[in-house]
Length: 294
Image (cartoon, rainbow, N blue to C red; front, side):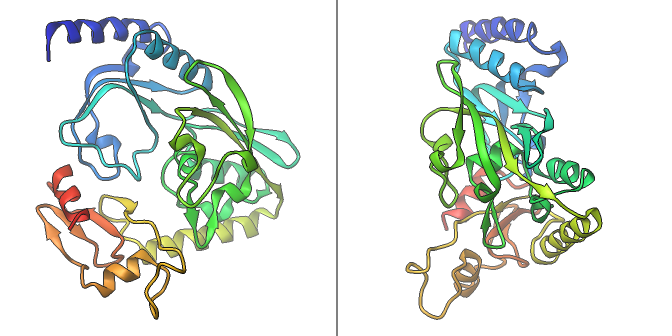
């Protein structure tokens, strides 16, 4: 890396340290331990943001310095290359959760889904308890329209707030957010999620906790949660894409193809769930990419 690039990174580092605590800005920061795969190289520059305002201000600095931005939430459903990530990685951690009306809860994009579920249950609010055990953050769940047990998280979203590449903030209803299977408009237009407002209702805490425990138990029994992975690798086929006689399930198709247990380096197709690639220790991003493309 040239001296001029390093000098520019140091300059941006100083600008970011005026927005967040200095210890939340790092040059050449390792990313592997920030992912659920536990693989990947370094970020040229990493900043941890904890509020929507910090996020907006950091994005402004990146825009003014023409530095490419990569957003990072809980580190699930992502594979960081062995050579790392160029530019600025914005690590979103925590944020605000608050009741905005009797049946609406706002959560900042850096809030974990599990944290949001625990918060709503503690307040006796139903609607999100089935999402217990979902890895990652609100931002990641909204961007990819997280799904579980046949449901999409967009079904419990009222509206979201985003910031554009030009720094403009505005609200968008769920109906206008171009949600689809594994999709939303965040994947195509450069907008960044600041918060999402979820639909909730009054509920009995005991029953809500029971539903959450049931969801957690299902995940523990059907997914290889004890080893590093990034969740399901492939999207499920639509009913008209699935071969006759097989479930509409990527895992079932991979299992039928005899790929359970397939190994490349330290990466293996899980014996528990064929749509999971797991890091058995020492896997590289290239191992995983090779296995996924097998």
